[in-house]
Image (tube, rainbow, N blue to C red):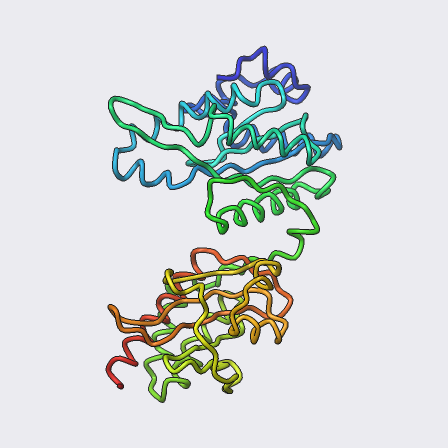
Length: 349
C-alpha cells in the first residue's frame, strides 16, 4: 500500500492530504490509488503542464480465473499484482486501479519512447510481474497482460486525447494477440480506426442482420441485406464472398471479380484478420492482390461451412485507406453472418 509519506512526495497529494484521510485515496483490495485519486492526479499533471506517460494495463483472460477458481482466487491475484506493480514502478510514478482488472500507470520518468520501451519490456520479460506463474494453495495461474501507452504532451495535449491514444494502443495490443505492450507512435497508429459502438448495441445488430437475411431471395440478395446492419453499426462498408467454386464476388457492388484460389491464410484457421498495410501487402495470394488493387488495407476473413463441408469464405473490409483494427464485436457479427449463410447454402443446395 502506498504510504502517506510516499504520497506526500507529490505536490498534488501533499495538498490533498491536508483535508483527506490517506485511506480515502487507496483501493481497498490492491493498496494502489483508487480510480478517483489516480484520475485527479492525471488532471493535475495536465493542469500544471507536467510531462508524463500514461499506460492502461488490462490483465489477459482474468475472467477465466474468477470463473474457474472463484473470486477469492481472483482477488488474491489482483492483490499480488498490485504489490508487484508498485514494487516495479517504484519512484518512477504511481499506479491506480482503474476498475476490475484494469490499472493505470503514470510515470514521470521514462517518458520518452526509448526509455519507455525499455521500462515496459522489462515489465514483461523480467519475470518480476508478467509472463510468470503465481501459485496460491495449489492453484497455478500464468499471468499475462496487455498494455497501451501514450505520452503527454508529446503524443496528446489534453486529458481526453491522451486517454484515447492509450486506449487505442491497448486495443491494438489485444488484436495482436494480447500479452504485449504497445507504445503510441503517430506514424504507426495515427490512422488506426475503431468502429463506434452502435446505438442499439450488438444484439440489435444481430437481430437486424437475421431479419434482413431471412427476408428471402438468392444468396447475393441475402448477403446484401444481412450485411447492411453491420455497415451501419460497425463502420464496415465492403463485403466479398469467395464461393466454393473460387469466384470472388463483390457483394457490396453486386459484381464478380473473377476466379481466384482460396487464400492460404484460411488453410488452418477459421478466421484471419489483417489490419496493417504492410502485412496486407506481404500476402501473396491472388485474392489479396485483387483486394489491394482496390486500395483496401484491412480485411477480416471468416470461413463459411458446416462440419467438414466448406462453402467458401466471407471477406469483410472497411473503406479504402482505413487501417481498421478488428475487435471482438466484428468477429462476432462476421461469425453470425457466416452461420446464417452456411445454413442457407446447406438447405438450398
